[in-house]
Length: 419
Image 1 (cartoon, one colour):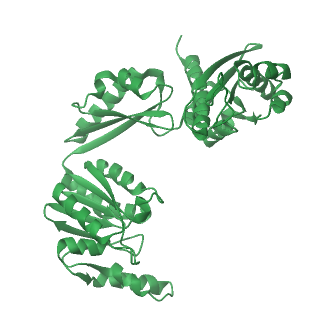
Image 2: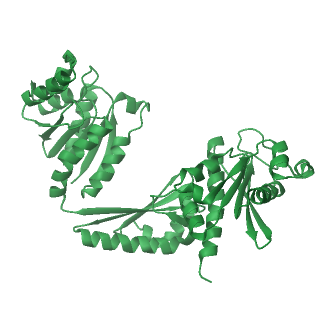
């Protein structure tokens, strides 16, 4: 069933509001066995909405349009739908009765503009809105079934589950299952190389990659006539992908990198402290966003100024003067100071130049040193790594914190691996 999603609203065109509806609908449609062919954003313009509906009806069997069903003059979807259907708008008495009851129950007079919400093109079906005042509309145009629902996410979702999902599951005749593997520390091109033949475009399940905030996600989609075949193929492909990617995989889309690190720390019964300069507490925030953080995270220091690096973490002033705050030596001292002062099993230290200023030819913006200190018997073992990170200030800080988490994650995996 070829499907097109139309998202209607000037606020979406202008980027004032993120279009979360289309992404949510795409995922729910797949669960119903329906693949979305494409998505289109349309302004609050009657002619533009009508043109989009006509074009979609020529290309698809199912159209879902969100937005433009409110009571204000810029809510023009019902008018545009009436135009393409060649049918006049008429009052739908049950919808009007529900609207009047809504306002009467609150002791309000119904504004004249709300009358439009009780109108639909002659011959169309009104769809009850269990979460708001604007009914949806179901109509047919040529080969295409058209469903128009409000743009308010809570209303759209309630109406999808009430009206669309049961009908679509009965019509689809196929099962689409998806899975995700999240990786960190390996670039997208290398992930593709590691996956090899799994990424051929002529295979089912289909495997693809996306990148967001430094995380490369591998997405797997199985499309089969029945659920058993889809599940078996999906699970097999996910296992194969995991084997190809090894330790680069940290999750399945349901956990963050920090949550996975926290789970490993709890499993190993170890506790962590942090020492941060350029990340300014972001590493600590990521860790405390994770559930059960108090089980594995002791706390940390944000030592932006060199004087605090010395007074709080025992970094020698002479070292800072000689090597600089952004150096392997400084990162090592910060990590060792944190693990000793906190009485932790591990400490992560991050120091760098987030930019856009502050760099030098030998230390450009994006230079970051990360150190991991680990208690070993009566002593402390420290290892340090340099990262050259691209992007703006926010991106450098985000990648630096995640890189630190990943260094610890890989060490914890080493510890838990069989000898």
